[in-house]
Length: 201
Image 1 (cartoon, helix red, strand yellow):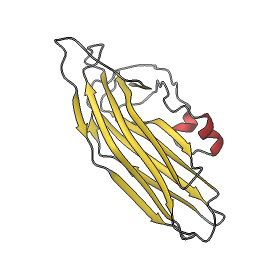
Image 2 (cartoon, helix red, strand yellow):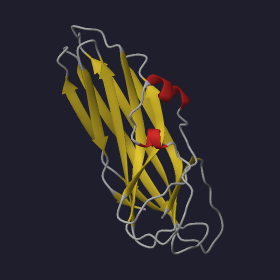
Image 3 (cartoon, helix red, strand yellow):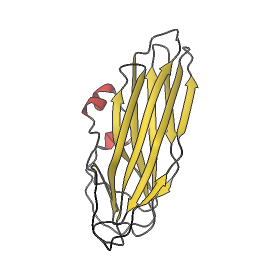
Image 4 (tube, one colour):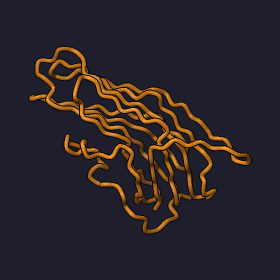
């Protein structure tokens, strides 16, 4: 199984003989919906960037890089019913083609892996978790970067240079950032999901 780890750290490299980072700028993404209550609900992902770097372990089975993203959920208009609650989630999906590991520890709360969150979950959510996860070859794992309750008509999560490391993977590694938002009134629940372009790590 391959292991994926993420921490919110900044990295400065110095010296010679080390290959340069490969920076990929990804296009912005926007989703919107007009709810049955009369609200205009919008979700955007901007400033998407993946910086793949040579892994410090110099292992052919390890990929390392840094990701940057901003997710914003906005409620506009004059709805018939007030919005009772809402949340915003930002994360990444990681895929490994060929698995070469055995028995890695699961260090991420599986309940959060599906992002079926309520407000109590969001309060306790670690924005920059250290994650060790099990993933069979050919499948995708989901890693949370942040979650936020909507206390006003706008909520934003911005992540700068979050560290990504994928180990025990013999084949290509693909990364895709995503955001999910939901609002609730007395008569309806509305959700939006946005996905960035996939990029190699």
